[in-house]
Image 1: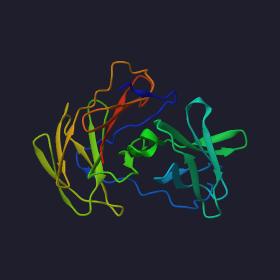
Image 2 (image 1 turned 180 degrees about the vertical axis):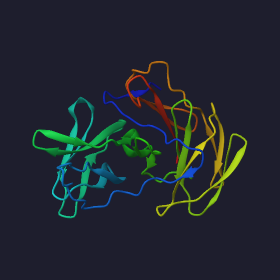
Image 3 (image 1 turned 60 degrees about the vertical axis):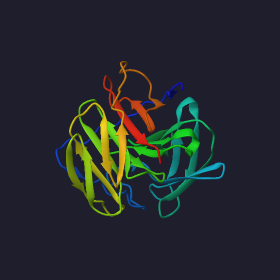
Length: 245
């Protein structure tokens, strides 16, 4: 299978530390514009596939013009309601899509640092790729939702209903879900190997960042999941592995 490619630059970096961590709280609807004129970028809250339509929900500033912008000029726009909520509907295609949320202000745009990834038009994993945090799955993902790596640090994350063990690289730790049932944990650096969590075992194929650090983001099949390679910053490389549901 040839890798899907996007012309859109992406950015992500793993959180660094040596203990379990939890994702930041979700952005609250209706956040007001800051006194200094800074405009809050949109935040994607949910995405789901309904028949032939992708339905994407999120929050932004009340009344803001929200745009999901992809490569090749593709853009989908809507106006947030008075509470800051918005919903964008997209006709699903078999393609893999990477979209960046932004708020339009005249001719300018306040772009989100996050990216929305829709593999195979929502039939595959759907996720928010986030700088400085773990990838957040939006589809009904398994207990291990993602493994992010920069070739050194490895950050695993997912969803579970109660505290439980996670085993990787010969070590076992305990992870606890946050209010949304999500967990994340920095693992020992490794090339590849088994990760056990939530009563299931996953064979992480490794980071495989690719040799070309300037290449456009790519997504390919890797083991029982999808491997996304993208640039964290100029001259660097990041990978995210998304296990099958």
